[in-house]
Image (cartoon, rainbow, N blue to C red):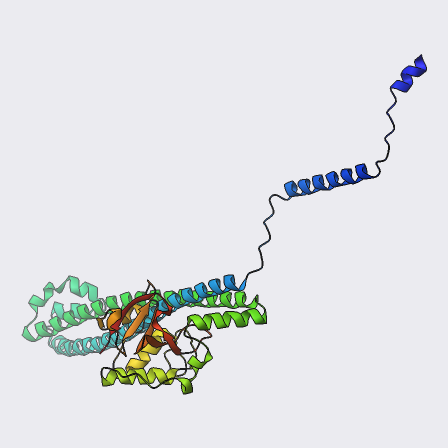
Length: 358
């Protein structure tokens, strides 16, 4: 009886599974392992799919557009920095000239003071004017009343010169601060341009040779066609223009076809978009401002339905691109990095407006 109770408490021996039962158990085990793996790895980031040509093309186009926006801002800051530099230099020259006149007046007053000193009649106002502290002199200018006619004239001249020099120096300080701010903007925009173009190159490098070729064909189609548009020998003669200046601007733009796009360039060997239109109209004797968003205000606005050869045509809501209209729905423009100056249809980009320069 006791033996029977001991055998009843023994753990039954498990038998190995074989056949269909074994296969079913293995399937369940694998499923459980997969589920456990998905739970433990729930925090891991999913693997990104390899970029397709279409996705790379869309990103590169956006980067090129952003770089062009930054380029126009760079061009504007560069123009403002140049103007501020000229102003600072002009103010420095003016301060030097006024200081020289002040020294001349003080020398004349000193000669008069010497004569009075020798005669024992040196006026207190002369002593004050010859002081090394002009501020003290200006604060106590009431001593002018004690000087004679000649002394009064000299003292008033000195007072005027000191005041003018003070104003010139204050303005020079303001312009110097403005120049420093423009230079900081230049560095910021330059960095943005280089960063975006480097990212575009990195994305293009992820494509195979065939994919890059497909991307270039697609980009060419969106920016005016294939390589033939970059060849001077295959372009037609300049379109009939409404006046001689417009004809000259168009002729210059035709001569620039095939030259590379370089951001910030105004020729003669490379251009960005606003650099090309500025150079074309400069060849016709017309001075245009440097950037797209200032060029659009350089003449009379015209509707798209009334475009004439020589008009400036602008694109995107931020007025970040410009071309020179040549008639027949076409323009000459500098499209983007890697794409030279070429003929392209006006309707290839979002139209923003047009300006007639002359």
